[in-house]
Length: 472
Image 1: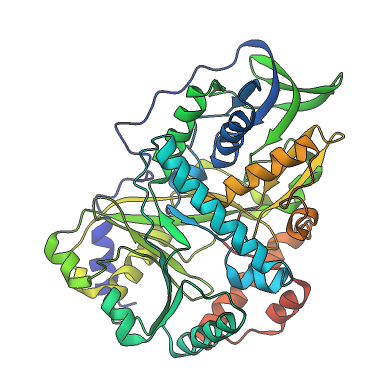
Image 2: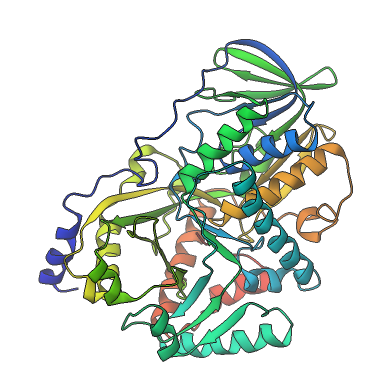
């Protein structure tokens, strides 16, 4: 990148606030008080992100008389649930390709369950008046290189033959640029029904409000410190108190699980995003985008981007940063070199938006697992359930994961718990220094593949055969 271009593009970041756009909201609700003293309940939910919020809400909807407590270490929605891109996908498997490769015999059922889950989220938005800018816009997966266009066409033919392309349309270069105009777009796959867009922080805050309305006792600034058996139930210690519960659901995701044996199944990955100022009507007209679909390109190091309710563009992805030892620290949330890189990519995609400024630039950790999609399990004779590993696609799938955890805690065999995806776990990551070395080699190999028409080297082909990977 030429120095003059770098200077021009980074100038667009001069006033960007290093905080997530969604959380920078004067309507942000006040936190609930911390737990002090001892409490008892039927179900304790640990974690105030989507995973925990959906679990608490669905538990009360299944049984209004159930006594439910939710504890959150900071504030509801402050982490990945409040700072993501706001893509609420039907896919439970981190995309159809990943699901088809891993569970070919179940993929039709998984797709059906995912579609029903997204419909249920839309229903909950209406029923609980969740003011979260929910839009059933669909998504376009984009090719920006000739080889990607060929691969998209081949993939479309494959899923069409398999009966999995009911709401999917292949778009050539002219057709995709009629939808959104960028000189970099060469083809696209338009999924018209499988993705909604929303304001992720408002969804979390709305779910909290709905939980409270149904009688869930929510305690924020209440980290769960230990998990131990207590009689026929479990006990969770917090800084100022103790909760005794018959059952516990863990929705801590990127943060270390209270079950030590689960920790090796995930690693934290840092993802970064930018948000522009609101576009003028002229700027919007220059790029089209009248359908407001979510967009993502097809590189191994991909970008995701979408319009907000007030016509800003969120532009994120590309770098997936893993720190040695799986460290999660606040200072990692701000990464100027990645934000500068993203700004350059943005103006390469949309040169007609030259001069647009970014108002927010942020990052944060998500959890990833070696199969890219959530895994589930129980502990302590079925009194504890957990779900983790959503790998950046948890806005929608966490509701399904909540249903699974509640099924497991009830000891029920359902169409969800019968799935191989639910019954089996991914391979764990190795200990350090092997995890960091393997991830670094994988990232280097993925970048090399992007630069060489998608050709995967021996390392990537070996990981493919083993069903292993690293993604954000």
